[in-house]
Image (cartoon, rainbow, N blue to C red; front, side, top):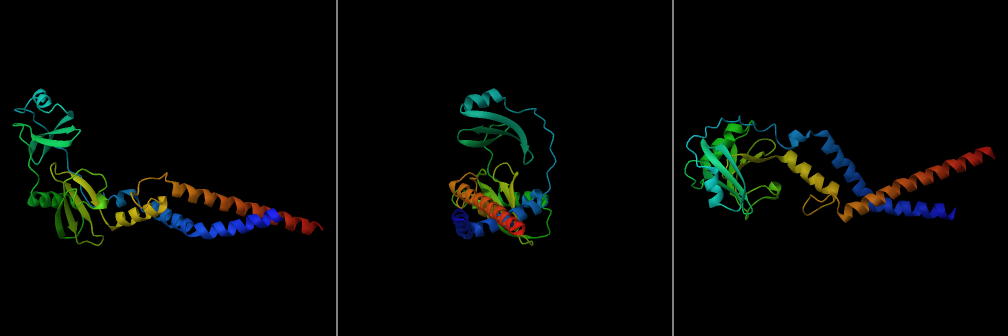
Length: 235
């Protein structure tokens, strides 16, 4: 009996301590399972551009680029902004060069970024704001995506934002209030309040362990209660 009372008391204390977190797990889990991940990622807001054929006549040989940029680990030929472009990936990031001259590709202008965003945006809003994003003013919702980018914000219902890569012109990310709510609930779910990426942090492990104790202790008290009722009925 003393053991059961001790378990019951500890059960109540721990349930009080982690009860709010258990509720947050249920609410965040419901949102994350009820809202399709494609909608969270904003794939319904942008159209995927069709691939463009490449005509490699007149471009610089890859060997010359390898000699000029010895730290390059990967060289790709692609078509960007109606131009054949080499994309060089190395330790210092990504470099874009004109395929015919080897000259660096200049950043997208604001007008070019708006044109690209307009061509892929499928929503019903109008452009509300345009910003050039670098490391100094990058919002947390971009995560670790390469910079710089153009941030094109729309005045639609969910404040959709299309991020256009500053050099390639690709859609780097799509964000909306649907994603922002998801991201906030994800933070609460995994209890990583800083980076929102560490699912194995000590805090969530501790809370999960206490949650398991609450369930097991509750089952123990239920079984004990059923046994006591059974004995009383027999007597």
